[in-house]
Structures are given as structure tokens and as C-alpha cells.
Image 1 (cartoon, helix red, strand yellow):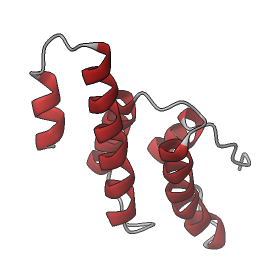
Image 2 (cartoon, rainbow, N blue to C red; image 1 turned 180 degrees about the vertical axis):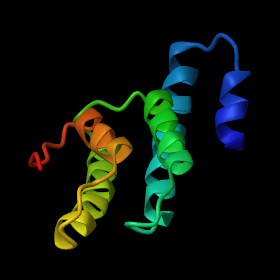
Image 3 (cartoon, helix red, strand yellow; image 1 turned 90 degrees about the horizontal axis):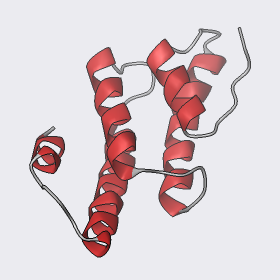
Length: 104
């Protein structure tokens, strides 16, 4: 949360600075995703993840996007293995990251 608040106050950045800030947000995103326990994530956490995705400017390719996709896939697999529908914020995140999930 603090990182997002600091990001709100950065002002105008050079291309190099903006790229570095995006990389740091992407790294924070992946790290945060790995701290979340599948099946026990609340809406506030998914909102923070969505905000980090926005700040990171992830494309569907690249190292950080791939690592985020893997982490999100772990969460989706939890719901699939328990025959439960993933929560909408998780489904929306998966779609934003370029993952396709079966409709149920």
C-alpha cells in the first residue's frame, strides 16, 4: 500500500525513470502475489493486486508477466481443485494477465 501511495506522488518522470518505476512495481506485484494464500484472499488484496498491475504496465509477455501469471494460475488451480468458482476479482485479474479460464 505504501508503495502505491508513494507512486501517486512521483510527478513527471523521464522514460528511464518511468521504466525503472514500472519494473519495481512489477517486482512488488510478483512478490505480493506469492505472499497470498490461495482461497484466503479478500477483495482488498485483489484490489491492491489490480492497482499494482496498473502501475507495472505489464504486457502479456516478459519475465514479470510470466511470474505473475504463474502465481495467479496457482490461485485459479486452488479453486478448480476444490470445484469452486474463482472470485470475480481473480477472474478479472487472470484475464488482464492474458490467462484463459474455463467458464463455469
